[in-house]
Image 1 (cartoon, rainbow, N blue to C red):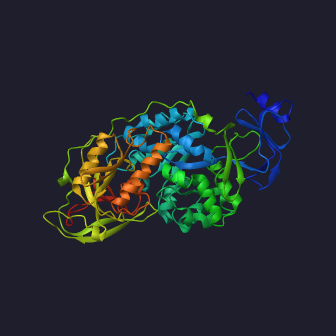
Image 2 (spheres, rainbow, N blue to C red):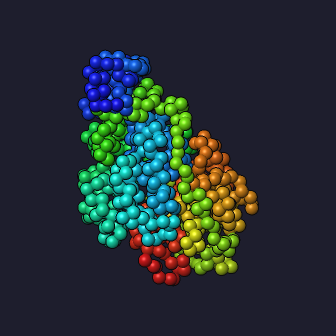
Image 3 (cartoon, one colour):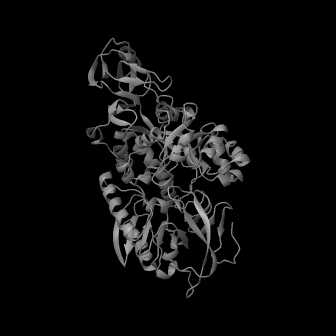
Length: 571
Protein backbone atom coordinates (compact mmCIF):
# COMPACT_ATOMS: atom_id res chain seq x y z
CA UNK A 1 0.00 0.00 0.00
CA UNK A 2 1.20 3.50 -0.81
CA UNK A 3 1.17 6.59 1.37
CA UNK A 4 -1.55 7.95 -0.92
CA UNK A 5 -3.69 4.84 -0.24
CA UNK A 6 -3.34 5.32 3.50
CA UNK A 7 -4.28 8.99 3.30
CA UNK A 8 -7.32 8.30 1.11
CA UNK A 9 -8.58 5.55 3.38
CA UNK A 10 -7.88 7.60 6.50
CA UNK A 11 -9.96 10.47 5.09
CA UNK A 12 -12.77 8.07 4.25
CA UNK A 13 -12.63 8.94 0.56
CA UNK A 14 -12.47 5.23 -0.30
CA UNK A 15 -13.34 2.16 1.78
CA UNK A 16 -10.62 0.95 4.11
CA UNK A 17 -9.17 -2.50 3.58
CA UNK A 18 -10.46 -3.57 7.00
CA UNK A 19 -12.70 -1.89 9.55
CA UNK A 20 -13.25 -3.02 13.12
CA UNK A 21 -16.67 -1.60 13.92
CA UNK A 22 -18.37 -0.68 17.13
CA UNK A 23 -15.66 -1.22 19.77
CA UNK A 24 -13.83 1.12 22.13
CA UNK A 25 -10.16 1.95 21.64
CA UNK A 26 -8.33 2.22 24.95
CA UNK A 27 -5.74 4.97 24.67
CA UNK A 28 -2.50 3.98 26.41
CA UNK A 29 -1.44 7.64 26.74
CA UNK A 30 -4.51 9.42 28.10
CA UNK A 31 -6.48 6.44 29.39
CA UNK A 32 -9.54 7.51 27.38
CA UNK A 33 -11.96 4.98 25.92
CA UNK A 34 -12.51 6.20 22.37
CA UNK A 35 -15.72 5.11 20.65
CA UNK A 36 -15.75 4.62 16.90
CA UNK A 37 -14.38 2.39 14.20
CA UNK A 38 -10.77 1.40 13.55
CA UNK A 39 -9.80 1.64 9.89
CA UNK A 40 -6.85 -0.36 8.60
CA UNK A 41 -5.02 0.01 5.29
CA UNK A 42 -2.73 -2.95 4.65
CA UNK A 43 -0.69 -3.34 7.82
CA UNK A 44 -1.30 0.19 9.11
CA UNK A 45 -4.01 1.82 11.20
CA UNK A 46 -5.36 4.86 9.32
CA UNK A 47 -8.34 5.93 11.39
CA UNK A 48 -9.95 5.78 14.83
CA UNK A 49 -12.79 7.63 16.57
CA UNK A 50 -14.96 7.97 13.47
CA UNK A 51 -17.27 5.94 11.26
CA UNK A 52 -15.67 4.13 8.33
CA UNK A 53 -16.70 1.85 5.50
CA UNK A 54 -14.51 -1.10 4.70
CA UNK A 55 -14.00 -3.68 2.02
CA UNK A 56 -14.04 -6.08 4.93
CA UNK A 57 -15.82 -5.27 8.20
CA UNK A 58 -15.74 -7.06 11.55
CA UNK A 59 -18.19 -6.29 14.32
CA UNK A 60 -16.40 -5.79 17.66
CA UNK A 61 -19.32 -4.15 19.45
CA UNK A 62 -19.04 -4.30 23.21
CA UNK A 63 -15.32 -5.09 23.02
CA UNK A 64 -12.29 -3.08 24.16
CA UNK A 65 -9.39 -2.74 21.76
CA UNK A 66 -5.82 -2.49 23.11
CA UNK A 67 -2.44 -2.46 21.37
CA UNK A 68 -0.79 -5.80 20.65
CA UNK A 69 1.34 -7.18 23.46
CA UNK A 70 5.14 -7.04 23.25
CA UNK A 71 7.28 -9.70 24.92
CA UNK A 72 10.38 -7.60 25.46
CA UNK A 73 12.83 -10.40 26.19
CA UNK A 74 12.65 -14.11 25.50
CA UNK A 75 14.52 -17.07 24.10
CA UNK A 76 12.28 -18.87 21.62
CA UNK A 77 14.49 -21.95 22.01
CA UNK A 78 13.33 -22.37 25.60
CA UNK A 79 9.84 -23.03 24.28
CA UNK A 80 11.33 -26.10 22.54
CA UNK A 81 9.52 -24.90 19.40
CA UNK A 82 10.62 -23.63 16.03
CA UNK A 83 9.89 -19.91 15.49
CA UNK A 84 6.86 -20.69 13.32
CA UNK A 85 5.36 -23.03 15.93
CA UNK A 86 6.07 -20.52 18.68
CA UNK A 87 4.18 -17.97 16.58
CA UNK A 88 1.18 -20.30 16.25
CA UNK A 89 1.32 -20.99 19.99
CA UNK A 90 1.35 -17.44 21.38
CA UNK A 91 0.13 -14.96 18.74
CA UNK A 92 -3.53 -15.94 19.32
CA UNK A 93 -2.99 -14.93 22.97
CA UNK A 94 -2.26 -11.35 21.92
CA UNK A 95 1.51 -11.37 21.45
CA UNK A 96 2.12 -9.43 18.27
CA UNK A 97 5.80 -8.58 18.79
CA UNK A 98 8.50 -10.74 20.37
CA UNK A 99 12.04 -9.49 20.98
CA UNK A 100 14.23 -12.55 21.10
CA UNK A 101 17.83 -13.25 21.96
CA UNK A 102 18.87 -16.43 20.09
CA UNK A 103 21.91 -17.00 22.27
CA UNK A 104 20.79 -20.53 23.09
CA UNK A 105 21.20 -21.76 19.53
CA UNK A 106 24.14 -19.39 18.96
CA UNK A 107 26.06 -21.08 21.77
CA UNK A 108 25.69 -24.33 19.84
CA UNK A 109 26.02 -23.24 16.20
CA UNK A 110 27.41 -19.70 16.29
CA UNK A 111 26.24 -17.07 13.80
CA UNK A 112 24.33 -19.72 11.83
CA UNK A 113 21.89 -19.97 14.74
CA UNK A 114 21.21 -16.23 14.72
CA UNK A 115 20.73 -16.29 10.94
CA UNK A 116 18.20 -19.11 11.43
CA UNK A 117 16.00 -16.74 13.44
CA UNK A 118 16.56 -13.82 11.08
CA UNK A 119 15.52 -16.05 8.17
CA UNK A 120 12.44 -17.23 10.08
CA UNK A 121 11.17 -13.75 10.93
CA UNK A 122 9.69 -12.82 7.50
CA UNK A 123 7.55 -15.97 7.44
CA UNK A 124 5.92 -15.33 10.81
CA UNK A 125 2.60 -13.68 11.58
CA UNK A 126 3.87 -11.86 14.67
CA UNK A 127 6.78 -9.48 14.28
CA UNK A 128 9.90 -11.27 15.53
CA UNK A 129 12.71 -8.87 16.37
CA UNK A 130 16.22 -9.97 17.29
CA UNK A 131 18.78 -8.63 19.71
CA UNK A 132 22.17 -10.01 18.72
CA UNK A 133 23.63 -12.38 21.29
CA UNK A 134 26.30 -10.54 23.26
CA UNK A 135 27.67 -13.40 25.34
CA UNK A 136 28.53 -16.46 23.29
CA UNK A 137 29.79 -17.96 25.52
CA UNK A 138 28.29 -16.29 28.56
CA UNK A 139 31.67 -16.36 30.30
CA UNK A 140 35.08 -18.02 30.28
CA UNK A 141 33.89 -20.54 32.87
CA UNK A 142 32.22 -22.95 30.44
CA UNK A 143 32.74 -24.77 27.14
CA UNK A 144 30.32 -23.74 24.40
CA UNK A 145 29.97 -24.92 20.84
CA UNK A 146 30.84 -21.49 19.42
CA UNK A 147 32.18 -18.05 20.23
CA UNK A 148 31.03 -14.78 18.66
CA UNK A 149 33.20 -11.68 18.46
CA UNK A 150 32.17 -8.07 18.01
CA UNK A 151 32.97 -8.37 14.30
CA UNK A 152 30.75 -11.46 14.00
CA UNK A 153 27.85 -9.50 15.48
CA UNK A 154 28.45 -6.36 13.43
CA UNK A 155 28.12 -8.46 10.26
CA UNK A 156 24.45 -9.04 11.23
CA UNK A 157 23.69 -5.66 12.77
CA UNK A 158 22.03 -4.06 9.75
CA UNK A 159 19.43 -6.77 9.20
CA UNK A 160 15.96 -5.14 9.35
CA UNK A 161 14.85 -7.45 12.16
CA UNK A 162 17.79 -6.55 14.41
CA UNK A 163 17.34 -4.03 17.23
CA UNK A 164 20.71 -4.04 18.96
CA UNK A 165 22.78 -6.06 21.41
CA UNK A 166 21.14 -8.68 23.60
CA UNK A 167 21.40 -9.12 27.36
CA UNK A 168 24.93 -8.40 28.49
CA UNK A 169 25.17 -11.30 30.91
CA UNK A 170 28.86 -11.10 31.64
CA UNK A 171 28.49 -8.27 34.12
CA UNK A 172 31.70 -9.31 35.92
CA UNK A 173 33.47 -8.90 32.58
CA UNK A 174 31.96 -5.45 32.12
CA UNK A 175 33.07 -4.34 35.57
CA UNK A 176 36.56 -5.80 35.00
CA UNK A 177 36.72 -4.11 31.57
CA UNK A 178 37.36 -7.41 29.83
CA UNK A 179 38.68 -6.76 26.32
CA UNK A 180 36.01 -8.80 24.50
CA UNK A 181 33.24 -7.10 26.50
CA UNK A 182 34.63 -3.66 25.75
CA UNK A 183 34.87 -4.41 22.02
CA UNK A 184 31.21 -5.42 21.87
CA UNK A 185 30.04 -2.44 23.92
CA UNK A 186 32.01 -0.05 21.74
CA UNK A 187 30.71 -1.70 18.56
CA UNK A 188 27.08 -1.15 19.61
CA UNK A 189 27.48 2.21 21.32
CA UNK A 190 24.47 4.37 20.47
CA UNK A 191 22.26 1.34 19.72
CA UNK A 192 20.09 -0.53 22.16
CA UNK A 193 22.04 -2.70 24.62
CA UNK A 194 20.00 -5.03 26.78
CA UNK A 195 21.04 -5.59 30.38
CA UNK A 196 21.41 -8.59 32.68
CA UNK A 197 22.69 -7.71 36.14
CA UNK A 198 21.15 -9.84 38.93
CA UNK A 199 21.53 -8.30 42.40
CA UNK A 200 23.91 -5.62 41.11
CA UNK A 201 23.58 -2.38 43.09
CA UNK A 202 25.45 0.66 44.33
CA UNK A 203 28.63 1.69 42.58
CA UNK A 204 28.83 -1.57 40.64
CA UNK A 205 25.41 -0.88 39.13
CA UNK A 206 26.48 2.70 38.37
CA UNK A 207 29.54 1.39 36.56
CA UNK A 208 27.56 -1.22 34.61
CA UNK A 209 25.06 1.39 33.41
CA UNK A 210 27.87 3.74 32.45
CA UNK A 211 28.66 1.27 29.65
CA UNK A 212 25.42 2.31 27.89
CA UNK A 213 23.16 -0.50 29.12
CA UNK A 214 19.54 0.52 29.61
CA UNK A 215 17.15 -2.41 30.22
CA UNK A 216 16.99 -5.10 32.90
CA UNK A 217 14.95 -8.28 33.37
CA UNK A 218 16.86 -9.78 36.30
CA UNK A 219 15.39 -7.71 39.15
CA UNK A 220 13.93 -10.12 41.70
CA UNK A 221 12.81 -7.76 44.47
CA UNK A 222 10.94 -4.48 44.69
CA UNK A 223 13.99 -2.78 46.19
CA UNK A 224 16.23 -3.97 43.38
CA UNK A 225 13.76 -2.89 40.70
CA UNK A 226 13.29 0.51 42.34
CA UNK A 227 17.02 1.23 42.45
CA UNK A 228 17.37 0.26 38.81
CA UNK A 229 14.45 2.48 37.81
CA UNK A 230 15.97 5.36 39.75
CA UNK A 231 19.22 4.87 37.87
CA UNK A 232 17.59 5.12 34.47
CA UNK A 233 16.94 1.49 33.59
CA UNK A 234 13.76 0.20 32.02
CA UNK A 235 12.75 -2.73 34.20
CA UNK A 236 11.17 -5.75 32.53
CA UNK A 237 8.90 -7.74 34.83
CA UNK A 238 9.66 -11.39 34.12
CA UNK A 239 7.47 -14.43 34.62
CA UNK A 240 8.84 -17.55 32.99
CA UNK A 241 8.53 -21.23 33.73
CA UNK A 242 11.31 -21.01 36.32
CA UNK A 243 12.09 -17.32 36.80
CA UNK A 244 8.98 -16.03 38.54
CA UNK A 245 9.43 -12.40 39.57
CA UNK A 246 5.93 -11.00 39.00
CA UNK A 247 4.72 -11.32 42.57
CA UNK A 248 7.78 -9.52 43.92
CA UNK A 249 7.69 -6.70 41.36
CA UNK A 250 3.93 -6.09 41.12
CA UNK A 251 4.00 -3.41 43.88
CA UNK A 252 6.47 -1.39 41.80
CA UNK A 253 4.15 -1.18 38.77
CA UNK A 254 2.04 1.98 39.14
CA UNK A 255 0.66 4.61 36.75
CA UNK A 256 3.81 6.61 37.57
CA UNK A 257 6.32 3.86 36.78
CA UNK A 258 4.41 2.09 33.98
CA UNK A 259 6.07 4.07 31.14
CA UNK A 260 9.39 2.62 32.31
CA UNK A 261 8.33 -0.96 33.02
CA UNK A 262 7.66 -3.72 30.50
CA UNK A 263 6.69 -7.40 30.50
CA UNK A 264 8.71 -10.41 29.40
CA UNK A 265 8.73 -14.19 29.75
CA UNK A 266 12.44 -14.95 29.13
CA UNK A 267 11.98 -18.76 29.23
CA UNK A 268 8.52 -20.33 29.08
CA UNK A 269 7.61 -23.78 27.82
CA UNK A 270 4.49 -24.89 25.90
CA UNK A 271 3.15 -26.76 28.92
CA UNK A 272 2.90 -23.59 30.97
CA UNK A 273 1.65 -21.58 27.99
CA UNK A 274 -1.18 -24.07 27.43
CA UNK A 275 -2.10 -24.33 31.12
CA UNK A 276 -1.58 -20.72 32.23
CA UNK A 277 -0.96 -18.48 29.22
CA UNK A 278 1.79 -16.13 28.14
CA UNK A 279 1.78 -12.34 28.56
CA UNK A 280 -2.00 -12.60 28.86
CA UNK A 281 -1.48 -14.60 32.06
CA UNK A 282 0.90 -11.95 33.39
CA UNK A 283 -1.68 -9.24 32.70
CA UNK A 284 -4.39 -11.17 34.57
CA UNK A 285 -2.17 -11.75 37.57
CA UNK A 286 -0.89 -8.18 37.77
CA UNK A 287 -4.44 -6.86 37.75
CA UNK A 288 -5.30 -9.49 40.37
CA UNK A 289 -2.49 -8.04 42.50
CA UNK A 290 -4.33 -4.72 42.44
CA UNK A 291 -2.16 -3.02 39.80
CA UNK A 292 -3.90 -0.28 37.84
CA UNK A 293 -5.22 -1.96 34.64
CA UNK A 294 -4.10 0.93 32.43
CA UNK A 295 -0.59 0.68 33.89
CA UNK A 296 -0.57 -3.07 33.20
CA UNK A 297 -1.72 -2.80 29.58
CA UNK A 298 0.67 0.09 29.01
CA UNK A 299 3.56 -2.04 30.32
CA UNK A 300 2.44 -4.82 27.98
CA UNK A 301 2.48 -2.63 24.89
CA UNK A 302 3.45 1.04 24.61
CA UNK A 303 6.18 0.92 27.26
CA UNK A 304 7.88 -1.98 25.51
CA UNK A 305 7.68 -0.25 22.16
CA UNK A 306 9.24 2.90 23.60
CA UNK A 307 11.95 1.05 25.53
CA UNK A 308 13.20 -0.75 22.43
CA UNK A 309 12.77 2.05 19.90
CA UNK A 310 9.79 0.54 18.07
CA UNK A 311 8.05 3.82 17.36
CA UNK A 312 5.56 2.31 14.92
CA UNK A 313 3.54 0.38 17.51
CA UNK A 314 2.25 0.38 21.07
CA UNK A 315 -0.82 2.53 20.36
CA UNK A 316 -3.99 2.09 18.37
CA UNK A 317 -3.53 5.29 16.42
CA UNK A 318 -3.29 6.44 12.79
CA UNK A 319 0.07 5.66 11.24
CA UNK A 320 0.84 2.85 13.68
CA UNK A 321 1.25 -0.81 12.80
CA UNK A 322 -2.11 -2.59 13.03
CA UNK A 323 -1.24 -4.77 16.03
CA UNK A 324 -4.54 -4.98 17.90
CA UNK A 325 -5.95 -7.20 20.64
CA UNK A 326 -9.73 -7.32 20.94
CA UNK A 327 -10.79 -8.00 24.53
CA UNK A 328 -14.15 -9.29 25.69
CA UNK A 329 -13.08 -8.56 29.27
CA UNK A 330 -10.28 -6.27 30.44
CA UNK A 331 -9.59 -7.54 33.95
CA UNK A 332 -9.30 -11.20 32.93
CA UNK A 333 -7.52 -10.31 29.67
CA UNK A 334 -10.04 -12.40 27.75
CA UNK A 335 -8.68 -12.26 24.19
CA UNK A 336 -11.41 -12.48 21.57
CA UNK A 337 -9.41 -11.62 18.43
CA UNK A 338 -5.84 -10.68 17.55
CA UNK A 339 -4.52 -8.77 14.54
CA UNK A 340 -0.81 -8.80 13.68
CA UNK A 341 -0.02 -6.15 11.11
CA UNK A 342 -3.67 -6.16 10.04
CA UNK A 343 -3.84 -9.97 9.62
CA UNK A 344 -6.09 -11.82 12.03
CA UNK A 345 -4.38 -14.62 13.96
CA UNK A 346 -6.77 -17.41 12.96
CA UNK A 347 -5.76 -21.05 12.35
CA UNK A 348 -5.89 -20.42 8.61
CA UNK A 349 -3.42 -17.56 8.89
CA UNK A 350 -0.68 -19.96 10.01
CA UNK A 351 -1.21 -22.56 7.29
CA UNK A 352 1.28 -22.64 4.46
CA UNK A 353 3.85 -20.44 6.17
CA UNK A 354 7.40 -21.51 5.45
CA UNK A 355 10.27 -22.06 7.87
CA UNK A 356 14.00 -22.05 7.18
CA UNK A 357 15.92 -25.33 7.11
CA UNK A 358 16.87 -26.46 10.63
CA UNK A 359 20.40 -25.98 11.90
CA UNK A 360 22.45 -27.83 14.48
CA UNK A 361 21.27 -31.33 13.58
CA UNK A 362 23.61 -33.99 14.93
CA UNK A 363 25.21 -31.54 17.35
CA UNK A 364 25.11 -33.77 20.45
CA UNK A 365 28.37 -35.68 20.88
CA UNK A 366 28.52 -37.80 24.03
CA UNK A 367 32.08 -38.56 25.17
CA UNK A 368 32.99 -42.01 26.47
CA UNK A 369 31.51 -42.37 29.95
CA UNK A 370 30.23 -44.90 32.43
CA UNK A 371 28.92 -45.03 35.98
CA UNK A 372 32.40 -44.34 37.36
CA UNK A 373 32.39 -41.01 35.48
CA UNK A 374 30.06 -39.61 38.12
CA UNK A 375 32.06 -40.54 41.21
CA UNK A 376 33.32 -37.65 43.34
CA UNK A 377 36.26 -38.58 45.58
CA UNK A 378 37.19 -36.77 48.76
CA UNK A 379 35.40 -35.99 51.99
CA UNK A 380 34.51 -33.13 54.29
CA UNK A 381 32.88 -29.74 53.68
CA UNK A 382 31.30 -29.87 50.20
CA UNK A 383 29.63 -27.07 48.20
CA UNK A 384 25.98 -27.80 47.39
CA UNK A 385 23.76 -25.90 44.99
CA UNK A 386 20.59 -24.93 46.84
CA UNK A 387 17.58 -24.47 44.58
CA UNK A 388 15.22 -21.56 45.20
CA UNK A 389 11.97 -22.75 43.57
CA UNK A 390 10.60 -20.16 41.16
CA UNK A 391 13.96 -18.38 40.90
CA UNK A 392 17.17 -18.89 38.97
CA UNK A 393 19.19 -17.52 41.88
CA UNK A 394 20.66 -20.37 43.93
CA UNK A 395 22.02 -20.71 47.44
CA UNK A 396 25.66 -21.58 48.06
CA UNK A 397 25.31 -24.28 50.71
CA UNK A 398 27.96 -26.37 52.41
CA UNK A 399 27.42 -29.92 53.66
CA UNK A 400 29.79 -32.42 55.26
CA UNK A 401 29.70 -35.53 53.10
CA UNK A 402 31.62 -38.68 53.95
CA UNK A 403 33.82 -40.63 51.56
CA UNK A 404 32.49 -44.13 50.95
CA UNK A 405 34.87 -46.32 48.98
CA UNK A 406 36.42 -43.30 47.34
CA UNK A 407 33.20 -41.50 46.52
CA UNK A 408 31.02 -38.81 48.05
CA UNK A 409 27.73 -40.45 47.17
CA UNK A 410 24.26 -38.95 46.68
CA UNK A 411 22.08 -39.13 49.79
CA UNK A 412 18.31 -38.94 49.10
CA UNK A 413 17.62 -38.87 52.84
CA UNK A 414 19.30 -35.43 52.94
CA UNK A 415 18.01 -34.43 49.49
CA UNK A 416 21.57 -34.47 48.16
CA UNK A 417 21.60 -35.51 44.49
CA UNK A 418 24.48 -35.79 42.09
CA UNK A 419 24.53 -33.08 39.43
CA UNK A 420 26.83 -33.47 36.44
CA UNK A 421 27.63 -31.50 33.28
CA UNK A 422 28.95 -33.45 30.28
CA UNK A 423 30.54 -31.45 27.45
CA UNK A 424 28.70 -32.38 24.26
CA UNK A 425 30.17 -30.17 21.53
CA UNK A 426 33.07 -32.51 20.86
CA UNK A 427 35.67 -30.06 22.14
CA UNK A 428 37.17 -31.64 25.24
CA UNK A 429 34.83 -34.28 26.70
CA UNK A 430 34.81 -32.65 30.15
CA UNK A 431 32.66 -34.16 32.89
CA UNK A 432 32.14 -32.15 36.08
CA UNK A 433 30.27 -33.41 39.13
CA UNK A 434 28.80 -31.83 42.23
CA UNK A 435 25.80 -31.84 44.55
CA UNK A 436 22.40 -30.16 44.38
CA UNK A 437 19.57 -29.89 46.91
CA UNK A 438 15.95 -29.17 46.04
CA UNK A 439 14.92 -31.75 43.44
CA UNK A 440 13.73 -34.32 45.98
CA UNK A 441 14.85 -37.08 43.61
CA UNK A 442 15.13 -40.47 45.32
CA UNK A 443 15.79 -42.82 42.40
CA UNK A 444 16.90 -42.77 38.77
CA UNK A 445 18.03 -39.69 36.85
CA UNK A 446 16.88 -36.89 34.57
CA UNK A 447 18.91 -35.39 31.74
CA UNK A 448 18.72 -32.46 29.36
CA UNK A 449 20.65 -30.72 26.59
CA UNK A 450 18.77 -27.49 27.23
CA UNK A 451 21.41 -26.22 29.62
CA UNK A 452 22.02 -22.47 29.77
CA UNK A 453 23.94 -21.12 28.04
CA UNK A 454 26.55 -23.58 26.81
CA UNK A 455 23.92 -26.29 26.35
CA UNK A 456 26.05 -29.19 27.36
CA UNK A 457 24.38 -32.26 28.85
CA UNK A 458 23.01 -31.64 32.35
CA UNK A 459 22.18 -34.59 34.58
CA UNK A 460 20.69 -34.93 38.05
CA UNK A 461 20.30 -38.31 39.72
CA UNK A 462 21.05 -40.68 42.53
CA UNK A 463 21.98 -43.69 40.39
CA UNK A 464 25.13 -43.43 38.28
CA UNK A 465 24.04 -46.15 35.83
CA UNK A 466 20.80 -44.31 35.15
CA UNK A 467 22.76 -41.06 34.66
CA UNK A 468 24.96 -42.84 32.14
CA UNK A 469 21.91 -44.17 30.31
CA UNK A 470 20.34 -40.70 30.22
CA UNK A 471 23.46 -39.12 28.71
CA UNK A 472 23.82 -41.81 26.07
CA UNK A 473 20.13 -41.65 25.16
CA UNK A 474 20.36 -37.89 24.69
CA UNK A 475 23.11 -38.51 22.15
CA UNK A 476 20.99 -41.08 20.33
CA UNK A 477 17.94 -38.79 19.97
CA UNK A 478 19.95 -35.69 19.06
CA UNK A 479 19.28 -33.93 22.35
CA UNK A 480 16.23 -33.11 24.41
CA UNK A 481 14.93 -34.39 27.76
CA UNK A 482 15.16 -37.89 29.25
CA UNK A 483 13.98 -39.60 32.44
CA UNK A 484 15.60 -42.93 33.38
CA UNK A 485 15.09 -45.44 36.19
CA UNK A 486 16.24 -49.00 36.87
CA UNK A 487 18.17 -49.14 33.60
CA UNK A 488 15.16 -48.11 31.47
CA UNK A 489 14.11 -44.91 29.71
CA UNK A 490 10.84 -43.87 31.33
CA UNK A 491 10.09 -40.82 29.16
CA UNK A 492 11.86 -38.70 26.58
CA UNK A 493 11.38 -35.78 24.22
CA UNK A 494 13.69 -35.37 21.24
CA UNK A 495 14.87 -31.83 20.41
CA UNK A 496 17.09 -32.44 17.38
CA UNK A 497 17.46 -28.82 16.24
CA UNK A 498 20.71 -27.93 18.03
CA UNK A 499 19.56 -30.12 20.93
CA UNK A 500 17.12 -27.33 21.80
CA UNK A 501 14.06 -27.38 19.57
CA UNK A 502 11.68 -29.86 18.02
CA UNK A 503 10.32 -29.85 14.49
CA UNK A 504 6.96 -31.09 15.78
CA UNK A 505 3.75 -29.09 16.46
CA UNK A 506 3.46 -27.47 19.87
CA UNK A 507 0.62 -29.83 20.82
CA UNK A 508 3.04 -32.76 20.49
CA UNK A 509 5.64 -30.99 22.62
CA UNK A 510 3.00 -30.18 25.23
CA UNK A 511 2.00 -33.84 25.51
CA UNK A 512 5.64 -34.90 25.69
CA UNK A 513 6.32 -32.49 28.53
CA UNK A 514 3.28 -33.82 30.42
CA UNK A 515 4.71 -37.34 30.21
CA UNK A 516 8.17 -36.15 31.26
CA UNK A 517 6.83 -34.26 34.23
CA UNK A 518 4.86 -37.33 35.37
CA UNK A 519 7.91 -39.57 34.95
CA UNK A 520 10.06 -37.15 36.96
CA UNK A 521 7.51 -37.15 39.77
CA UNK A 522 7.75 -40.93 39.87
CA UNK A 523 11.41 -40.42 40.77
CA UNK A 524 10.36 -38.25 43.70
CA UNK A 525 11.06 -34.93 41.97
CA UNK A 526 9.09 -32.16 43.69
CA UNK A 527 9.80 -29.23 41.35
CA UNK A 528 7.00 -28.06 39.06
CA UNK A 529 9.42 -27.47 36.18
CA UNK A 530 12.47 -29.67 36.81
CA UNK A 531 13.97 -29.50 33.32
CA UNK A 532 14.19 -25.73 32.96
CA UNK A 533 15.20 -25.47 36.62
CA UNK A 534 18.06 -27.87 35.83
CA UNK A 535 19.03 -25.77 32.80
CA UNK A 536 19.66 -22.68 34.91
CA UNK A 537 21.86 -24.51 37.40
CA UNK A 538 24.62 -24.41 34.78
CA UNK A 539 24.55 -20.66 34.09
CA UNK A 540 27.67 -19.15 35.72
CA UNK A 541 26.51 -15.53 35.58
CA UNK A 542 23.59 -15.96 37.98
CA UNK A 543 24.44 -15.90 41.72
CA UNK A 544 25.40 -17.71 43.80
CA UNK A 545 26.58 -21.27 43.10
CA UNK A 546 26.41 -23.00 39.71
CA UNK A 547 28.12 -25.81 37.80
CA UNK A 548 29.60 -26.03 34.28
CA UNK A 549 31.78 -28.60 32.56
CA UNK A 550 34.75 -26.90 34.26
CA UNK A 551 33.39 -27.61 37.74
CA UNK A 552 31.40 -25.96 40.50
CA UNK A 553 31.35 -22.18 40.06
CA UNK A 554 31.36 -19.61 42.85
CA UNK A 555 29.57 -16.89 40.89
CA UNK A 556 30.16 -14.21 43.53
CA UNK A 557 33.92 -14.72 43.19
CA UNK A 558 33.66 -15.72 39.52
CA UNK A 559 35.94 -18.71 39.95
CA UNK A 560 35.95 -22.51 39.80
CA UNK A 561 35.74 -24.23 43.17
CA UNK A 562 38.28 -27.07 43.47
CA UNK A 563 36.87 -30.59 43.61
CA UNK A 564 39.09 -31.62 46.51
CA UNK A 565 38.22 -29.71 49.73
CA UNK A 566 41.84 -28.71 50.41
CA UNK A 567 42.77 -27.62 46.87
CA UNK A 568 43.13 -24.01 45.73
CA UNK A 569 40.45 -22.27 43.61
CA UNK A 570 41.16 -21.53 39.96
CA UNK A 571 40.21 -18.40 38.04
